[in-house]
Image 1 (cartoon, chains in turn orange, cyan):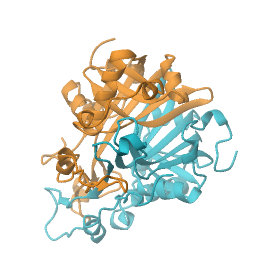
Image 2: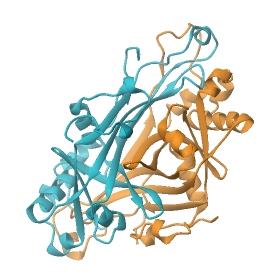
Image 3: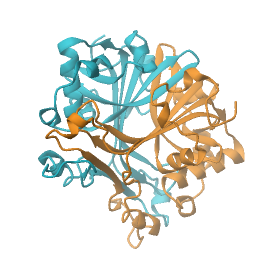
Length: 230
Length: 230
C-alpha cells in the first residue's frame, strides 16, 4: 500500500492523533537529519530492537551490516520490519509533571526489505557513507570485492509509515499558571565537536573541509517553536 | 533468568562479541544518561518500535504513558517487550568507507512489564520526572487523582539484557594508512540550550537553578577514547 498513512489502522499510533502529519517532506527532513535508526523485528522468542546507521535514498531506507549479522539476515529473508527514527529536540518543562513533555519528531516505518546487489548495492553504500559524512565517498578508495562480499545491504520501501512531531509551550491549566512553578522549554542542542586526528595519521593530511565545517555548526539543533502548541 | 547475560543465546547480538560487556554499572550509566528508549513489541501484523521517555529505578526500567495508548496497554497485558537505549558518541572517520563506524553505547533489554499501582505508581512517576529534569518533583504540585487515573506506569525488570560499546580509532590496514585520506574521530556533543520561559510565565519566577546549570553543561557529551580500539 503506497501512501503517507499506514494502510492498517492497528499500525497507526492511536494517541495524539492531532500530532500526526501526512507531510512526506517532513518525514524526509527527519530521516535526512538523523544518523541512527532502531530496527524492530520478531525473533523466535519475541521482539528485538537493534540500533543501526541508515540513510534515505529517495523512497527507500537503506540499511547495511555484516553478512554475519543475524538480524540483517532475518530481514534479508523477508521478515517484517519496523524502523523507528526519533529526534529529541527539547524538554517541555510544565508547571506539573503531568503536563511536562518533550519536543520531538518521530518516524515509524513498516515493511519488508529487499537485498541490494551489484551496482545497486555499491550505490547504496555510497549513499550511506555520504549521509553519515557528507562528501566522504569522494575522499576514500572504492570498496574492495572482499569488503562487498562481507556486507549485506538492505532497502526498505518508504510506503507504510507514520510521522509525528510535538512542539509548543507547556499547556498548564489556570490554577497551575497562577502557581509558583517555572515553565518553559529547555532546548536540546546536538553538534559536532572538533575532529580528532588518528594517532597514525600521516603528516600533512589536513582535516577535510566538510568535517571542519561540521564542527562549526550545531547541525542537528532545532529551535523550539515560538508559538503555542494549540 | 537473572544475570547480566540474556539466558537465550538467540537474543544476544552475534556480531562484535568482542564489544560485549557484562558490566552492569556501565549499563546503569547508559540508562541513567539517556532520556529516550525505543520499545519494541509484536503487534498483530508484525513488529512495532515506539520511542518513549523512561527512567531506571534500581533493577527496573520504568515506562509511563496514557491509559489510551495501545502499545502501553499491550505491555500491561504482558506482551513481550524489547527496550533499546542507544547513545551515539562519535563518528569514526576511517580511510575507507568499510572501516568507518561509530562510537556508541547500546543497551538492549528483554522481558515483560508489570503494572505499577498506588504508592509504587506515584513513586515511579516521581523517578521518571526527576530523571528527565533533576529535582523537578520538588518544584511542582503533586499529581491529581484524575491525572493518575489517566496514566499507565509499567516496570520492566532489568534481568535479560545485553550491553555494547564501541570506541577507539579507525583500524585501517597498512595500504590505507599510507594513502591520502584523513582519518580520525568526529565527536558528537549533546548539550542543553538556554531555558526559554513560557509566554504565560508570571513575572518574578526565576529559571530553576538546576535548569540554569544544565544549560551551562554539555551534559551528554562523551569524549572519544584516547587509546586504540584493539
